[in-house]
View 1: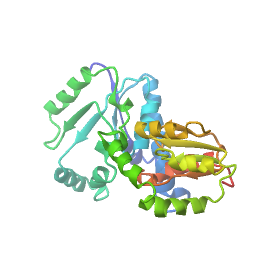
View 2: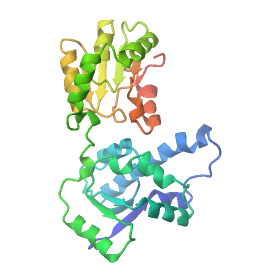
View 3: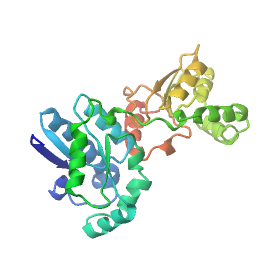
View 4: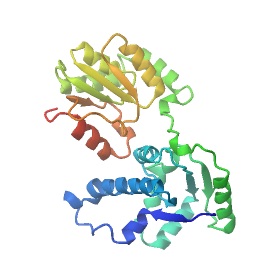
Length: 296
């Protein structure tokens, strides 16, 4: 390829003994909830640090969550990036997984169906390796890389579901006529309001605020402030219209990526939005533990 490329993979770290033996499912050695998020946070930062030092890299990595993709896009901003999606027939993928013997059975299927790794956003090139890796496969990837554009697809966010086609218009037409008769209005919203209690004087962070109907209600009931977060451009536009004339404000961002000042809110709400997240722990760590005051 003309210049030396270094190969980076999290598997290299695992195989090299970087991670200690697992010692249970709770406490500081809890791999899933404690060690793993920090491990991959560090791995992502290492990619950026190595590239920023002038190294050309080939990174072998499964981007499992939208938050990982967003973090990488932020860390790699300003660098020359080319993202290749490697796809394979599922039956062949499972055969390889079994043959390797160092993977949890069903891990590949989970990446595809639960994490939706090929649906997290656009890529620069896709290669099908069902038939294996051949010189032609390598040549196809390197040729595509040599003809890459200056802007990588890693920096293009995945469109919100509500911004696709006429989804928002159909949603709005349905909810507009059913606002006070839907299951949300009859059961879910009263239950949430009962949990909130008197919002007077509270600074509210609303994750997945939608059109800010709930935020306007809280402001009318006495909340000191309302900050809504949503990743849909159409929802944000509707929210701005609904909050016009109030102190409420909204921000176009994904729930996973929002950065809020420490101890800056008293109440965090997330109505019918957390089920969109594949991994709750990073969001809870950033929003609930960092931004909400101790008694909030």
